[in-house]
Image (cartoon, rainbow, N blue to C red; front, side, top):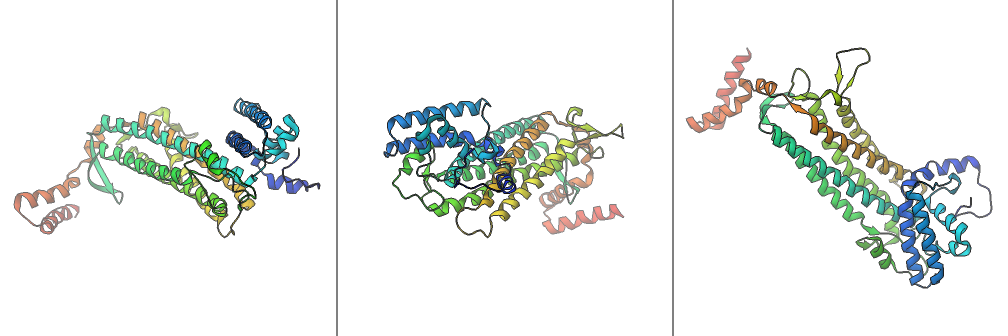
Length: 398
């Protein structure tokens, strides 16, 4: 299979395998966006006079055929083709001959991959927002069902003050709302069309970048070609940071669920069909899915750090280092959506043990309320009332 950069020499087989890596597999998630961008690019080339009308029609028909093959699972990228960009051009050349060779006019693989990634990332981020909305709806139902039940809240992993399950469930709901705001801001920032910036220094012919941006649904054109390339890793890191905010919130509440469902605490009951067992201890029912939600946050944080480390200290322009970022971001999208689905299922099925919650509300949990009763009923200052109550519970501990 010919490569887009081929210059008449044979690449060392070890170097070819190393540089391609899994890119030809990863790009199967990207290729439909690459095809759609190629159709719009061909439209622009015809509009500017670089393609004859009959050439454009043939190219568009072939690309639409390729898109159908991709969406039906009947097309694969050959490892020798390296990526989706080469696979698309090879398909066109095989189908159309000379007309197919014109599709790469006024673009590089660099702005081609940037465009496809931006289109994919926008869709993925919007899908994450849909999952966030779904989980928030489940949390509101949980709060409605169990919100009236009070329990002893904790600070320093010690009983502190009364709380209730509306306060607790809606805390995660509010956190996810903030996460959604950050994700929407990220969508707004990456919603810039880089197509037409070439390898990071523009192209030496006149093209209509506004036309491309409008047809692909971008809100604006990313004008500076050097920044277009530099922003690739920056935006990847921003996306991973936003997703890590979601996983951070899920992590904290996963720990709460594990703690609250401890038999000695017992506020929450995790149904058996959400747990796994021990291979040696027949009595054990383990909250494995919640533990994995907690652990996946660490993985997402590490991927965000990986993204930052791979791209730092690079001079302006494209570098092959960037190839490794694709799989990092795509894997994180899968991980965060899996975490959201599992957390949603847990909150749909988890139960509250009202008796255990009531038992937790022992006298010392009401100490702060007692301080304010003295303040309101006896006219004491807060500090004097605090010391009176502290002395009472201090003597109880002796």
